[in-house]
Amino acid sequence: MSNTIVVAALYHFVSLPDYKELQQPLLDVCLENDIRGTLLLAEEGINGTVAGTREGIDALLAYLRNDPRLTDLDHKESFTGKRPFYRMKVKLKKEIVTIGIPEVSPTQCVGEYIEPKDWNAIISDPETIVIDTRNDYEYELGTFKGAIDPKTKSFREFPKYIEDNVDVQQHKKVAMFCTGGIRCEKASSFMLTQGFEKVYHLKGGILKYLEEVPQEESLWEGECFVFDDRVAVDHNLKPGEHRMCFGCKNPISPEDMASRDYEEGIQCPKCASQLTQEKRQRLSQRQHQIHLAKKRGHAHIGCPVT
Image (cartoon, rainbow, N blue to C red; front, side, top):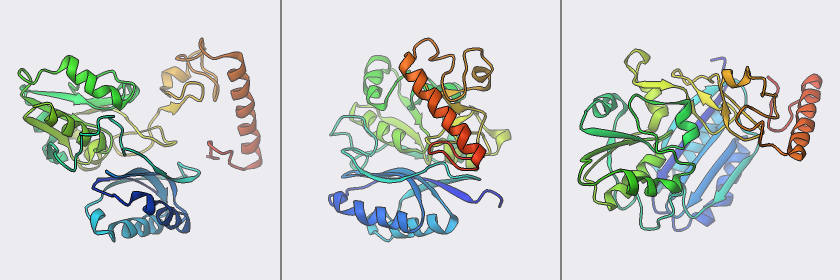
């Protein structure tokens, strides 16, 4: 395989009362195996995305699954020819995905997992409403056919969206999805606490669906946003056409990059009129350093040589 870097998105909801003590040993294992990315530890479990060699990722997964509590750790893989992360961090958090409601816990109650092969039938049921639990900028790049965009800026806004727009008496079947499965799993737990009875969520998320469902059978439309330098992946889990704007940190399309308001590494049509002169100058200097680094054949942090 020409692409030698394995990108592993992993998570598991499980009670980890000793999560603080797990931080340093986990970081040590990652550093020993030249793995980079970010992992989050909380009392409710583990979450994150990391990248490394095949051997390195296998060593990390073996280490994690050696803990009986993490034997059923969920992970998805994709491949790339360059490292999408430049540092390794293991952070301690109150939640591994933040909804801001302490009583919501997938370790206590969770909706019905739907395997990717069965997902099309679920979301094609006219009695089922399909909700994308991701944020608005993720929805914009791609989503499932017929899915609702809650127009949230962060996952914390999801409960308010449900309160204002989804009726427990009217909407008897609710199906939800997200990138890797973690947000919709927690969302399903929240929905059950609100009295919804039939709550489905896509097991393994969009990434698992793209991996397992043939493109000719797919109900996915567009690209899938990912939280690394690839920005988005297509149906073959290859880097897509979108890039990241350093000015506003939003994904930008080829059409955005063709705009007169686009300046590489500085601004895009979404933020061109909003950047302060100070920030524009700072980004311009950064972009100049990136060009110099590429000429020397070196990688500037945050922008690898391609």
